[in-house]
Image 1 (tube, rainbow, N blue to C red):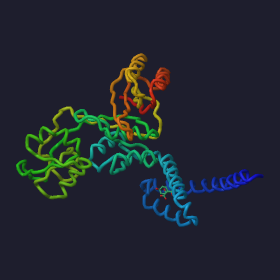
Image 2 (spheres, protein in one colour):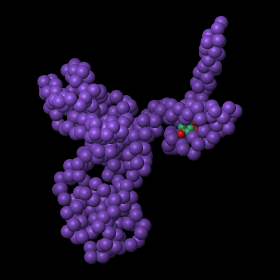
Image 3 (cartoon, rainbow, N blue to C red):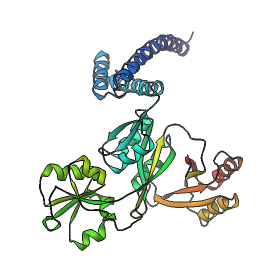
Image 4 (cartoon, protein in one colour):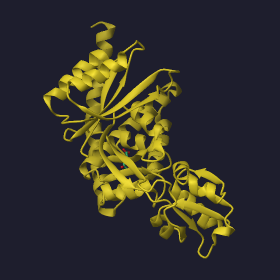
Length: 356
Ligand SMILES: O=C(O)C(=O)C[C@]1(C(=O)O)C=C[C@@H](O)C=C1
């Protein structure tokens, strides 16, 4: 046996032992999952993971191997979480913000029985779904008045492992929330999410109220409630007022009466059934390329309900495109359309399949 063969024989022997240990570990993970199910505990346990990683690092003699081993153990835990989610019926959904935020209201409507798990940023919602900590993620995609939530579209672009499996339109009514008994004349400053501020622009201008952006509307309400300061107000939903002991001083201050926010549902599982689908594509910078794509879509008979373009993350002055098409994504023509677009575009990817 030469050295290569010898080394590979050793790898095979170690892998055989690891496989048996992997099965043993997963059997223990299954017991943990069942315990968590019985006691209503979340799958993800950040404190436990930190302890597991610390113990793992301490067991490695060779310092150069330590970071690799930590990665390996983290991967094992990520796989364990996916397994746990699977056996527990994957009934967790992620959203950004705090209870009462619009994303939380949308999540409740979409998944009334799921455990709603809050994350501080959209980025972390995407990561949670990606890692399998939650089966779904609910994030805002566009607002009928303030427009696209571009950062979310960029995250979709940057997470090719995730799919959009559903959309949900939530009518948004922005209300001016104050401490009980406060009058309009007492107000000096307003706090809310940047989009809610944009949606209430006319009202804020009319009453000359400066506004400060916060990560979400519910956090703004919480901040106003905790400040105890009657010169401060928040813009948020009526549900949020009840949650934080605030009063609706002026209801529906949003400029656009039909203000609606569209939320998308993210999943790691590829959807198959729906009457709409969305694509992300990039093009070579040549004359007529975009027109060519639009022509192909038209030739296949798909009605295009939306088209957006965004700067490519990390590539200055290059762009990617998003389109939403009406049609059956499982039809043979869709596969043919994607094959043809594969030739026309630099890259093309099916992002979502859902019913509207
Ligand atoms: O110990 C647990 O709580 C587990 O679910 C097991 C495990 C692991 O694989 O070690 C997996 C997920 C948790 O976030 C922490 C640890």
